[in-house]
Length: 466
Image (cartoon, rainbow, N blue to C red; front, top):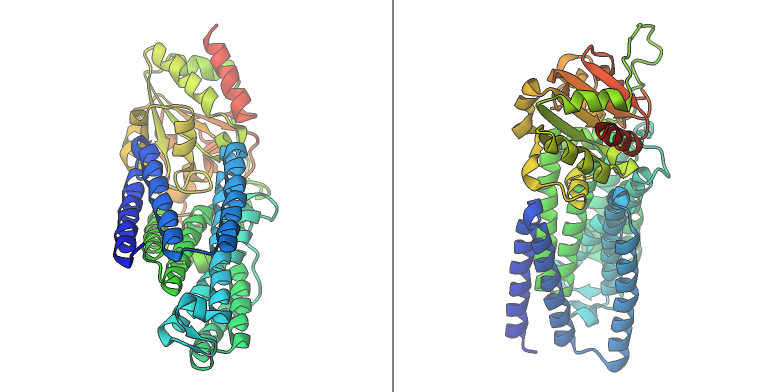
């Protein structure tokens, strides 16, 4: 295959990747967006193989790798629960980072195979790209592993605050800059592996101080890192499709991180340095203040909702854990059949990754036109008879709006407390992922429905049939 044809096909795949991102921006076009992405990746892979023309043995190894990786991916995609999607995304990000490290290592030890010079005499531009790519890739690898462990519950979601962590991180960053310069000037293999080791350590130290409440930002941030690592790989390999794809993923991940930070009224720097999400103990536990909580049962909730004119449903991670989205859809159908107006309210950082709630609701075939983002629905809570909060804790905490001493003060929330009645489904009165007591539990208009989200919702649906 000629270089011109290959460049054209890479351009076509790049356009398809852009169309994929555009499609993924809305639930109604997300399937089409995935389809465009799959076609674009197929064209890019086939073009790369046709351009390289590997030997029979090399071709067999490539096919073997595709079969193993594709097989693992197919099995994982079929078996993974939607509640585990955030940690799966973090795990995939780690693999992209590891790939960047391995390809950079291959380029250092066999530059002739990449057409970037010879051992000890690699082109300056290529060595800079490799040094930066391996640093970003190594940070992405270990950072994503820590994010996976936190999201999967194998490590505490609370921030792990090391003494002098900021000084240590700055020292590591400065050392990396020095090592990158040394790598460019000396092309030493020892310096290369020192860059890898320091970057691996930095990836761990950057993520362990970040608490659970900031996990959506971490996921999108690591997504951005993996994109830039892939782009660096593309420069090393001279692969136009990889450069385009990496740049798209890197820039879109950065934009998404900004949106997530805006959704929490926090700066990106404060997320990286602040460790918010767990260091503050639940305020209501032992502060000596008497609080009254009104609890109810499924029959009470069914009566209130069936006699309402407007119900706004607010899903959260508790819904995801209980896999209650299908029961929730059945509840909404019952209400609509009774003439009740039903809408869903989604906070930008509900769940453990961007778009988590939208995906779960789409899985239950919730109509897209009933799902609204915070800025579009918040003004309607005051006109709602019932706000049905199912496992959404931190994003409904009035302290973020009313208490200037609260660590989450200033974070935009869903104003569920302004509804005539707030039905709050939760296993217990414990604090949310941010580790902060929710004052919504104790408000006069709130009725707590304590129990498993799926079971409680199913009981409410059953009570509606009486």
